Length: 69
Image (cartoon, rainbow, N blue to C red; front, side, top):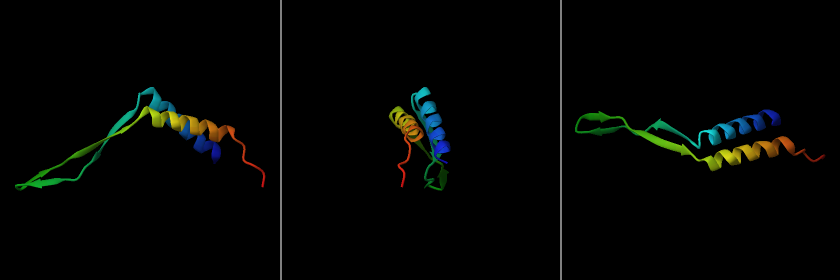
């Protein structure tokens, strides 16, 4: 399980860093104005810093061994 999570973190970190961040849109709150229905969108951005943190976190998770109980 730990290996799968670390692989996902490393992959996502590399993708975010390769594209210098990711931007995506989500549906926003619809607006009704004078009988017209206007759809809106909200733009979001994932910074390359977050990608670097995901990459480092995945590597650390993969390399660090759990302590024996």
